[in-house]
Length: 126
Image (cartoon, rainbow, N blue to C red; front, top):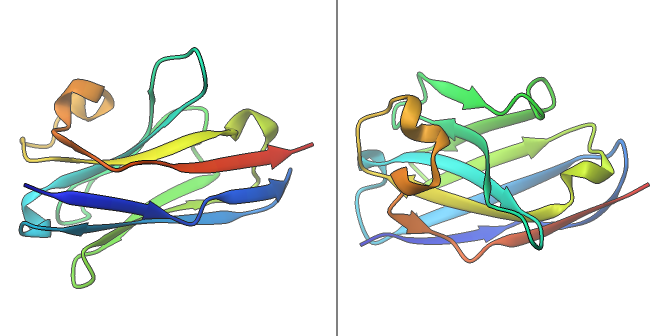
């Protein structure tokens, strides 16, 4: 089993930046592809970004492409989401997730991930 703990959320003005971190424990981190999702009240959880275990493949939602960067440090069992040029529409609870399946187009799907963190809140003010 993998335990995931997110941190780094907070309140930021539009145009600002935040870096989210997600630290894993419990199993070998390099066994997992990692993803970031976000959710607002009343809406489904939506894909933000994903990264393969070796960092050679990344994918982004169109809404964040060019503004957000996902990365990972396997030595620290941590995946990051650098968020730049934030807009109010980025306001959400952000969740990291781990998937042991082979990296594929299914990284966009919530159901691909077997492990989830508790979430960290990001609020972008206008």
